[in-house]
Amino acid sequence: MVDTGIVTKRTKGFYYLLDENGEMVECKVKGQLFKSSRYDNQIAVGDRVSFSRSDADDIGLISGIKERQSFLSRSRVGIEAEQIIAANVDNLLVVAATKKPPFRTNFVNRILVAANVGNIKPVLVLTKTDLVSKQEIADLLEPYRNIELDIIESSTKSEVSDSELKTLLVGKVSVLAGQSGVGKSSLLNKLFPGLDIKVGAVSHKTSKGSHTTTYAIMHQVVKNTFVIDTPGIREFGLWGINRDNLGENYPGLAAFNHQCKHRDCHHIHEPDCAVKDAVESGSIHKSLFSGYQSIYHSLAN
Ligand code: GDP
Ligand code: ZN
Image (tube, rainbow, N blue to C red; front, side, top):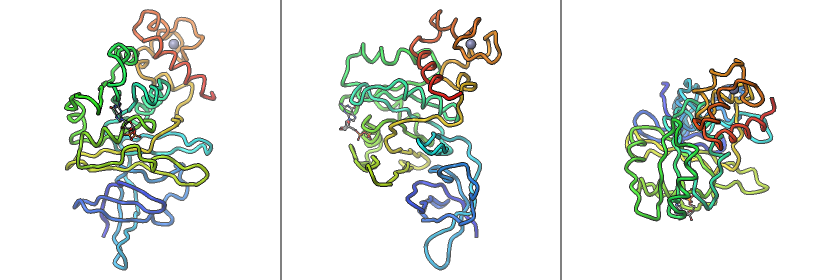
């Protein structure tokens, strides 16, 4: 008999599914499945899969994977492969701290691009707001203010209401992405006290010299509400993005992208560029645009 389940966790060779009755099932993948896959990891957390239960032991066998509605993927450094971090996700929480570690604009921008590529709604969550002044918070967030992006400020060390964030998460599947140390675990524990995720956990880091890889984990925090915690991401390489399609996927540019004189305008050297005009007039924030230029120049062609 074939059942369906959602992948909540994986380890080397094993997948842990939540079946339709809410039970955990340990599974392996059928040998011949995904022989010619272009993916580094063929099955990701959040994937809906079909599987059969075995009579001989308790380990099920995954035999198929359903089409993804959305996904967060990146390029694995060094191996030129797509790594699907999470699949079938409603919200992508881009978690960045005001400081400790410092706010990395380039990192945030890259994840916002990946959200567009993967058809996920991004939300910028600025953590550790207790560490800086109101003015510093305003300065950090200003480039993102007049684009279509929800922004939530948070602090686990002061009295900040989490109701907005909680409302956003309830009944949805959300993935958290950010560098190690920005406060993802602390935030999840504060929102859902039963979770008890280790704060400052070293397990989130890949230890040098060994081949340990850690994967995302999906937690069911309340019924029908899932959050996917990802291991601290150090570098975010964009997958499926090149110099020709960056503009249509970059936050805040899409509205102007097609108004340029040249249809395939890259908004770099071309004359009569609507994007550059929008930067001049202040409709696109200068530093948001320099973020675009910086990603553009990092791309090969
Ligand atoms: P993660 O690696 O993103 O999961 O980050 P953690 O949740 O493990 O937090 C890393 C460190 O930041 C810990 O020492 C936390 O106590 C600290 N931290 C988390 N949230 C806040 C916050 O809102 N304010 C301050 N000042 N420190 C925080
Ligand atoms: Zn242009």
